[in-house]
Image 1 (cartoon, one colour):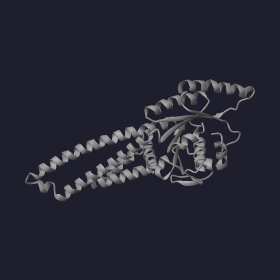
Image 2: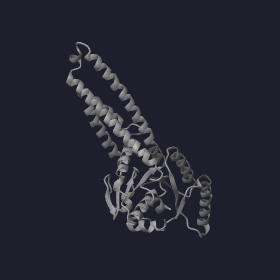
Image 3: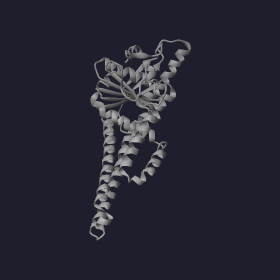
Image 4: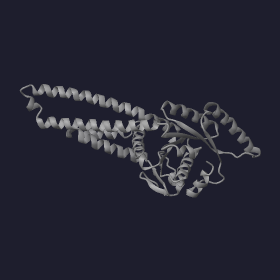
Length: 326
């Protein structure tokens, strides 16, 4: 199921409750597709990165080669926020009058810990990566635990609408400024109050503001359209056959559907093997009870059950062996 999904899409998101094996499943899928001849990028958006531990090497915010045909990168939320703030501060400093530079710096510093800042910054990086999709046959995102990911998937629509609102307010302000300039030119003191150079500076600043807002709008709208394109993008929920992961999966599915995200399938990871005795047999029966609830709510979705591995899945060889179960 997983390899079929990956073969038919350009972007795959893997999400679910923490600790269920999202990184292992997403990394094994990405590696299997690279082994099949595709050029693949594996991206971690989880602040608690595990890709480096999984591949036993350092992975940072820029793509590094992990295996033939497979690149990997980890989006660092703190670094992403810092880069985001630096870019926005620099843009605002260029646009605003020089005497307001200190106010710009103060405002941006206060914004550092504002609610949603990390999500917005990570979202812009995801949008940038998605824009590079033409460089890869497949991009696989290993996302943060459910709640964070659900908010992230809903953000493109909200950010696009918010930016669109800013643009409309900016256009109203521009029209008002144009009226004032026109009135000023009709008076004797027009050129003194609104000197040609000053007027040109204002118009240039307003033009840059519009360009910045439109660029952000296009980026968020592009990501929104990409996520909503079910032929191009899919979301796979990874879970364990336990009560809380099952309940969280049902809730996550509903949140993703409201955000217009296509849930392409479910992966039930770490299942106990059949034919066990005693305690393990009872646990297997408990799993079946929880999965019956999952089937009742989400039975129409494709589902792949993966048996618990006897040993930790580590390194390229371990991931290749794990992918044989797909």
